[in-house]
Image (cartoon, rainbow, N blue to C red; front, side, top):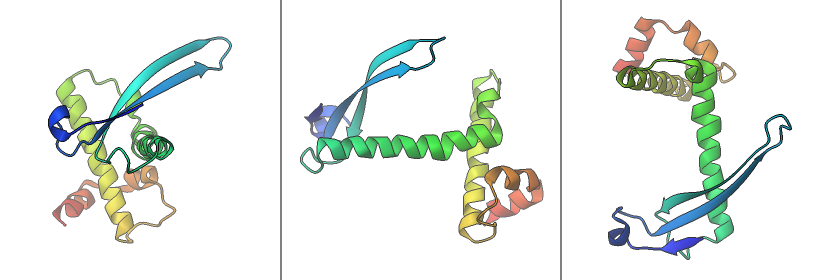
Length: 139
């Protein structure tokens, strides 16, 4: 379901529609049968008649696919983020910031052609020294 709004109505600059997406999920593991039915809400800067319902669904899927496959997966596989048991909020925030910084540095070096395109972020991270990281931050 989509609802046309104005930025003033919603209180978000540039928001022209609110989208409600119903998600039905069923776990196929017979040992742990589980079903869920949730509604997620999205704010969009696209006008209501700019895209069809199907196009908006594809945009939402693409957004989450990029996040899960790009950032979250890399942070968990490369840095073991899900296994990290830091309980202090400030320390957890600092660690997340450092992980994002390392991924950003890797992407910059890859963009500049200073990393073999086949080298993974994990293998590059293991070979990175503090002085190399400091030099990257100066650029």
